[in-house]
Length: 94
Image (tube, rainbow, N blue to C red):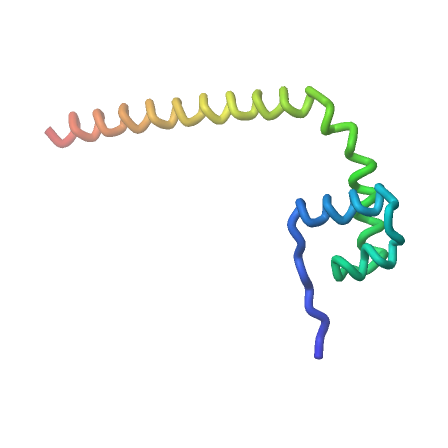
């Protein structure tokens, strides 16, 4: 019987890490409640603490907005090129 690899959602990981940070229960009780290994929960806790500053950073939201603007511009260009290609195909076949 092999090990079963489970994948957990990011919200599940955040809930586990927040329970550990709150410190109301012991690590063992939190791990048994969620059914995960203490080593894994420790890693999730460290990830949460290490990336907590990004939650309040406007740089990430600015980067996402800029990325969305670039994507929108590229889709606009694709649409324009498709219209031009269809027009050229129509002219050549006529």
